[in-house]
Length: 209
Image (tube, rainbow, N blue to C red; front, side, top):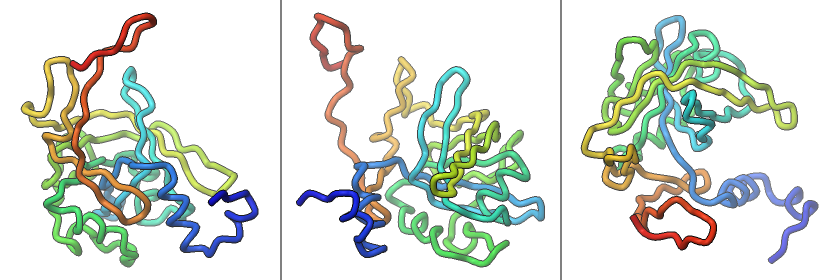
């Protein structure tokens, strides 16, 4: 089947959402923790996290069209801090439940049964159950006019990773940490590694390391 632009536009709304969200392949899926200026915890599931650079350590997330209320967007903009937490098989259903539309000011932590964890220097809650997590400070919010979404760029200022998941060269073994991935809007997956490969050079075959 080949879909042209007009074919895509004419797809039923929910079908198109599932279809296009699955098209890009497997994605990172994380829980983003924030706290409002009123003191209310918020937890939301995101599959738009991406790496922006290591020096300085930056990452980005895309937030869908939204008002700046006591939600992820509003809390990040007003407080300047948020946390990003990996999801493990032991609580992925609770993580998915965070996508439900709870009333403003209601704590998803409490509603889904996850525990907030606070650390010095980050005015936002981490997920205690998460094996790998990091705290970010907002450095830039970019409005994307094409579809009304927002690019949030954060500076990574605190990282929590158990020593047993880190190789001698700094590589984090996500398989050992049981970090899951996702595809589409609602499909979650565990991972099996194929291999780590050597740095690619001209006229030199890559090798497993």
